[in-house]
Amino acid sequence: MPLFPVERLAMTIQLKTADDIAKMRVAGRLAADVLDMIGPHIQPGVSTGELDRICHDYIVEQQKAVPAPLDYNGFPKSICTSVNHVICHGIPSDSKILKSGDTLNIDITVIKDGFHGDTSKMFCVGDAPEHARRLIRITQECLYRAIDIVKPGITLGDIGHVIQQHCEAHNYSIVREYCGHGIGRVFHEEPQVLHYGKPHNGPKIAAGMTFTIEPMLNAGTRYTKLSRKDGWTVTTKDRRLSAQWEHTLAVTADGCEVLTLRAEETL
Ligand code: MF3
Ligand code: CO
Ligand code: CO
Image (cartoon, rainbow, N blue to C red; front, side):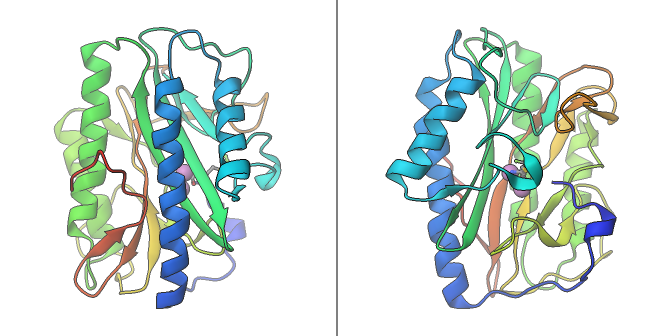
C-alpha cells in the first residue's frame, strides 16, 4: 500500500527473528483463513458492508485477533472491498450490492500477538466475463512468478521486473502509486516493494525479511484516481477493470515461505 515519502523517516529494513516469524506465521494463517471463510458468502445480492461485518466478527470473536484496517489512518471499516474498476482500498458499504459479473478484491489484514498478516484475493460474483477472468488470472501469475524468484541475494528490482514483464506481455498495465511493503509489528514498514523495476536494481533481499507482494494490474492505462469524497477509494482513471492479489512472505535461507498461503493454492 501507499507509503507516502514523508512517512518514510527510517530507511532501515528490519530483519525478523525466528520467534517473530513464528508469530507472523500465525497471523498470516489467520488472514488466509478469513479469505477461505468469506468465499461462500460472496453471492449476487450481498452488500460489501455485510461482508465486512462477517469478517469483522470472525476475526474478533473466533480468531481473537484484531482487524488492522479498522481506524488505521482513519479507515472506517475492517476489510477492504474493491469492486470492478476500484483498484484498492474500497470501503465496504451497505449500499454497495454485488451483482453477477462483478469482480471483487477482498483484502484482509489481521494482527495477532502483535504481528500482522496481510493477504488479498480476487473473487468473481456469479459469472464474470472471460476478459475479467483473464485479467484476474494474469495478475495472480504475476504474484506467483515474483514469489518464485524470492531468495537471498536477489534485489527488489528483480521482483518488480518479473511482474512488469508478465503484465505488459499481456498488454495490461501496472499500477505504480501503490506497492507492497515490509510488514511485522508495523503494518507498513520498509522496504517499499514496487511492482515494476529493473533487474539487479534496488536493495538486496536477505533472509529474515518479511514483506508483501501485491501487484495491481489494470486492463487499460495504469493511471489512478483517489476519491476526493472519502479519501480512500482508488479507481482506474479510465474506469476499466483492475485486479490485485497479495501474499505476505518471509525470506528463508534458500527461498521464501508464503505466510498467507491458502489450502487451494499450489505453488
Ligand atoms: N491491506 C492493505 C495493504 O495491502 C492496506 C489497507 S490500509 C486501509 O497494504 F487502511 F485501507 F485498510
Ligand atoms: Co499489503
Ligand atoms: Co493488503
